[in-house]
Length: 351
Length: 285
Image (cartoon, rainbow over all chains, first blue to last red; front, side, top):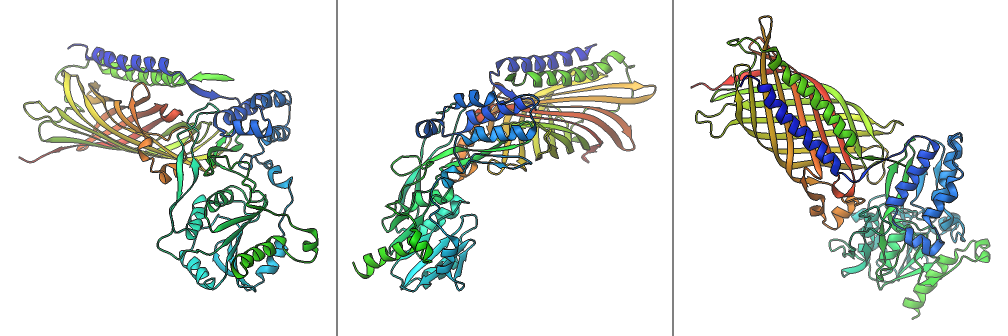
């Protein structure tokens, strides 16, 4: 054993050969994009191409062809364009998808396309809502306010699902509403938040386990690479008070993301009637990635379907379609709330 | 669009690292010290244990396509512990070899976004002497290996964190070369661990963690891993100089993990320099 170093060389050589052998067997590689206007453009297009989950739906509903989008916007990219101009072009490109969960975040602005909301009547006035709530309303939780209306109807406003649910305050609210004939839940302009909060609140409105929809996620880079669909079941909250009287759920185009999920769930419950405008959609769980220049891109990657296996990305239609009336607005009356009150009174008080 | 074959660059990195190993491993053999020297490092006898603790600082480069398409790099700190336990007189069970390290760092992408990084590993091996001479020892044996890295991207909102690692069976190679500079005995200790087969955690492509939690898809996070889809290499080169009752250990370590589990790519590459103390413990008879 005069040259044990040779043995070491042999062993290490084997490891080296092994690593080289492995390197030859890796078929897929990292996408390498340079930090140039072209590189950032291609990076954004590729990230979306691999990870965005609604290409087929957007092609069907909006006629978006992602390859055509590449051709359309690539001609606007030049090496000497300013960073701000690049941001405008990239925002316009992802704006084609008309998805509230698709955003480009930079030092300049948050790129978005909210035409799914702004192209439609607002059907909501915060001032009018405040008239009904007054100043003596109670808090059921973060962004959750309630009051008993004069005709003995409970009125609950959920501005967002960002906060958690306070079980004790919800119990207290149901105690307050115990003698009410029905409940109006107003989620107009609720932009979403935490889907668990939405599910937790919905679990107070059923006595039985209910199938509410399906979910899956992108499991590969192809436009149709999806995991198997998982069933979404709503379990009743067995440890707290539950509501069994009629519920009118008020919606408009501003209901997005978790609020959209909330409507999807509540619509399956027999005591719930959805009144108003279609929701704004946002039926995809968002993911985030980054461009070479550090800008952050958010996109939908896990779609949710309703109980009839239809996408909820483009919004959920109400059971009763309603628009705010100009005359009501001028008279300081909220058409939605008045209609809901009438509906409950017609169902319960004067059936 | 420029495509880089995954691990081609990493393989070249491995090659560079291994080249350094080669040079350092050959060094004592080339120097050919005189026989019969007092040594800076001898293998532990029966009922003896050698412990080595080190602290270090180095650089880490991470890329994990589940959370980002960008590369992150930055300074890392390390705590490292190695031990060797003497073989029984019959030598059947070989030497006990343990390695463990903790790495932590705050990494940054070229454009300034940040990622927190932490890694722990624990490797246990049984090694047998393949070559034993006055100037060197070569030990080889199977290893049970556990490694887990956590990455937390500060700029992401949903897929903000991920974990990579493995629980594997692998190979361990230890080489100890003894030499002298003038009358001062020194030793070079080269060590490599590489996982061969086991399991490794990884979410599936764009699988959200709330999905895992909501639908109890925990099992889907566990993947079969072998060198074809999960390549790991942990190596260190240490120079050992006698000091007081023990020895001073100066080392360079590399830790590499690359995989394509779950349909996305991972490359974690850490290099650090360390300084530590080696102490030999003997059980009283």
